View 1 (cartoon, rainbow, N blue to C red):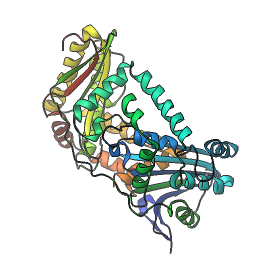
View 2 (view 1 turned 90 degrees about the vertical axis):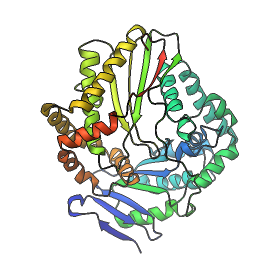
View 3 (view 1 turned 90 degrees about the horizontal axis):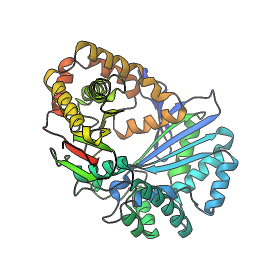
View 4 (view 1 turned 45 degrees about the vertical axis):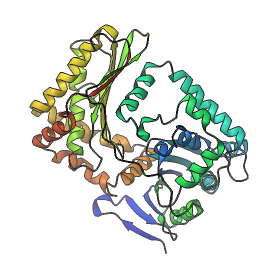
Length: 424
């Protein structure tokens, strides 16, 4: 029997729907526009790629809408186009994601195509080669791109020996080794009802959604067969790795161990990161690196709460001859934040921005569904949207200083530079 429970008085808009078959989804019911947006995620992702076959997860995601069931790739795409149904899939290091958007009058067709793509993909040989070539074209371009080379080298150094070290889309060499059977096998062991997360926004009620959930996912196996992934602490701290590249600008990446998403200090760390380099025009690094010294056009930092290796990461690009100076400024600002914390004005402005801008994450149905799936995956609770701004407000100056110490007080960061930097 289907059950529907409202999460709390503070989050009545988000309903927990459990289908007759026991599949859970979070629903925001909105009938003002005849549109339905659905976001699904399966835990797994590129971390499940076998050794030497990096890119399998991404290739598999790219093939899901290239023919399914009795429909060839062309027939499948024609059915989507004829009814203006949007269907997308992608892979990241920890999961696969699928997104569906449809007008309600085409919901039957849209959900059936989504079901076929998720449960009965064909992985036709010609489609495998076509999508492989699309990815390879991107990889060939990235082989000369300093940003891409710096990012790849950073994860290679930071996550050496761990699946996270492999590029999500693989390499030209590894992707060439992936066979159709590899893709099919990964789909069979990776997609199941047990590692599935679903969020829906739009003109559909809970009863109707419950029936749809069983139609969509009942053919999937009950449990996935994911390879265990070991926890990892970011490695090679203090190392400066250079990717030699004959370009006038050096692309810099730097990183330190981060905070897990459910760490009690995560929100304080989030604010600390915003003050250091997360706020585009207001951060300390923007002011010190770009505004005061003109060392770079942009400089940034962010938290990446990967499931098995949370990390703090930042980057900039500057003239080769000023790379050492830029990195010195960045390091000195990290040390200053650890030592002195933030001023009252910085702290208040950071909170004000993070609270005021949160609503921008929810200005479309697709964004709302995507946010809900991430909240579910992170285990933050169905009422998190209502609690989140209070969590930001509750962070004290002592909390921020403690989080900054945990984030940035672990010694010198790992630094990777693509270019010919001077002074490193």
